[in-house]
Amino acid sequence: MKRTLTATWGFALLLGSVFATDASAQCRVVPEESEGALAPAAPPSADAQLEKMAVADLGRDHLRLALSMSLLSKTELTVKQITFEGLRVNGIPFYVAPVTDRLQLPAKQQFELPQPLQLTVFYRDVDSLKPLTELAEQGKAHVEGILYLDVELKALQKFFLGTGKAHVPVNFSKDVPVEIPGGSLARAGAVRVLAAADSALESAKDKADSMLNAGIRWRGQLAREYAPAMLLVQSRFMLSGPKGDQVVFACTGPGFRITPKRFLVLKELYEPWKFDPEMAAAMKEDHFKVAPKSDDLSVWSADQPLAKGGVFADPLARKSLEQIRVVNEPPDDNDTVLVPRPQGHPKKVPVHKRESPANLVVLEFVDVVTDTAPAGMKGSPTDQQSSWDSVAVYRFPGGTERKQTHPDLIFIPVTKETFRLKLGVPVDGSAWGAPLISPQGVIGVIQSENSGLTWEDIQRVLAAPPTPQ
Image (cartoon, rainbow, N blue to C red; front, side, top):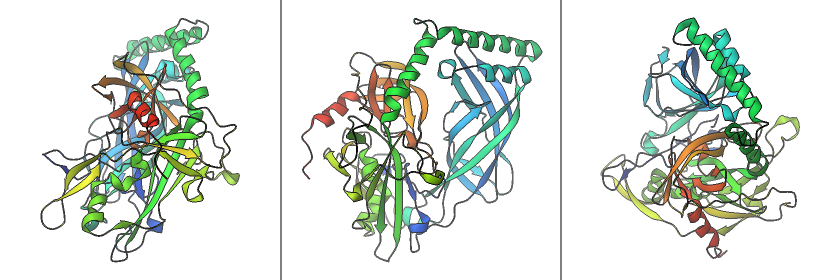
């Protein structure tokens, strides 16, 4: 998600006996703007080696590949999570879930991931299966993408109790052999299955009642009506300490328009320090504070063109320029956690709940041209349905480190449990705050790696009286 040093925290013990989840996965430390003993050093680095790939599951509607990968680091690294961006096989985008196992990488030794990566593509999500047919015919494929290692950092232990992390990017691009269990007969069978699926995909474009055609039409609708309404949002602020330490944070995530002028973001992205236990403890126990006039919010449109020279475009709007104002910010929904301290007993610290209707903010563009802005996303109630086989999610895994703001599209299953939406597969922090889009409209918004807020709760936030300015 980010190519520079990041710091996240999540080592807080919930009141009871459960560890708090990582509450600032969207945030990074900006080393070049930080000062004092807490300014982190340059991030570690690593290389990825692609070993081989095998067909793990070949169906009439999907293909799953198992990719064996190893990592090589110059120094010892403790990896807490691995996420992926832009992974493609023969040019076709595949989805791979984050690796959440804790890994110990030795110095200067190849470390093979304990399990092959599971890469999945549904035929409905691509225009042609010919590159996959070639994969089966030739017994090899070109694999490329970026993975990000969430690496524990020792540099921040004294302040953030050893829970600092670097978000280390690793690029990979290589031709790898592809195994199809069962020998030449199985390979010939795989070619026939993929060729038949490709023919069905082509013919589906002319059949209105085809399920594949429905998927193609939905992708077209997403591209026309939903992708342009996506926004890339970044908040920045400085925590200053009593001994002169100044740590600058940049927190990035998605937002989306509900009208041409108004948009939604998570409150956790708007005011990150309220949600992180260690930040809250530092502010309460160690007399850190958000430096006056240091907090800002910048917003880019998903279809915003590059600036001259191919550099990242200037923001569409900035809070510090009075181009963004709060329309509605729900009252805080607080919880209490126990945060371990370097010395003495853990301390009770109030933090805001992430999985709550209060973790949402309605913002509005001020003095920003919206005449040609896309319409807002339309919602869809969840009271008539309890599960969705495929829900679309737009996210920005490259953050502001990419040269453009074009979002990635993934599909996940979702079920409704009580008053929350549960995700069938976990998503990384680049998707927190993204809308969950069904064929009927937005059914909710993602608030954590496996949970989301329903559209009904979003409506209650939208209907609340405006927040006094």
